[in-house]
Image (tube, rainbow, N blue to C red; front, side, top):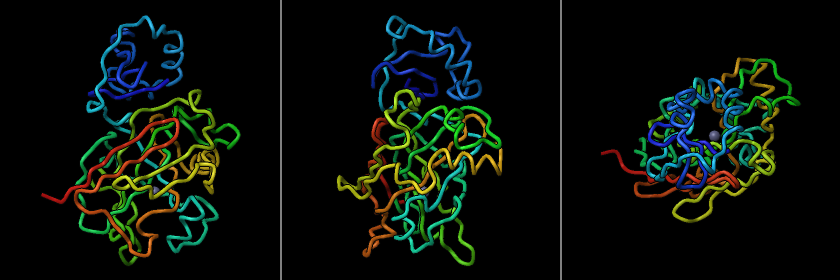
Length: 283
Ligand code: ZN
C-alpha cells in the first residue's frame, strides 16, 4: 500500500496520479487527516486490507498537491554518521553506538518544494526515513520491523556552519531551518518493498549523481536503530526516523560545493520515489 497526503487528505494510491480518498470510502472512520492512520495503524491497515481498491471511487492526484506523508510527527529522530564512508569523509570516528539528534518538526515538508538557503554552508543528505506504526519501548532488533508502518524518502538538508559552530555544535539547529526536512512523495508499506534492509539511495544535484549507495551499508540497520532508540525513549506512532546519509555530501568533497541559489536537488530511493527541491536565495 502507498499512502499519500493530498492537499491534507489521506489517500491510498492506486497509481501515481490516482487514489482512494480514505475519509470518503471509510465513511469518516479514518481520515481525512493523514495522521489518523498512524494513530490507529493496526485498525487502519486491517480496514484497508479489506478494501476492494479497484472498485472504490477514485480521485485524481496531482503531484503538486502532495504534502508530507506524515505532516505532524510527534518526534523526528535522526541518526548521524551511520555510513562508514560518510563518517570518514566527515572527519569523524566510526560510531560505536548510534549518534542521535532531532530535526525539529517545523522543518518537515512535502516532496516538491522551494527551500530558502540559510546563511551557512548548505548541504544535501539523502536518507531512508522510517515511519513508526506502533508505540515502541524496549523493542529488540528481532521484533523491530513489526513496529514500522512504512518507509519514505527524506533529505536531511544541513547548514554545516550552524551544525559545527563552536563550542559544542548545534546539529538540530543546523538541520531544522524551514524546509530542511523534505519527505515523501508517499509512504510505502513494507509488503511493497522487495528488501527493506537493502535499498538504493541516491541524491543528484543539477542532474549529476552526488550520492549513490545502498541502505544495506548502514552501520546500524533499521532494526538496530529501533532497538537502541526504544531502549532510551518511547517511539510513538507517526514518529519519523531519518536513518543517516551515505558519502558524497559537499562537506566531504575537496572543493566543498555547497548549495547555491537556483540549484536543484533530486533525492530518490529505489522502490519508494523521489523528492525535488529548488534552493533559492533569501528574498
Ligand atoms: Zn543526516
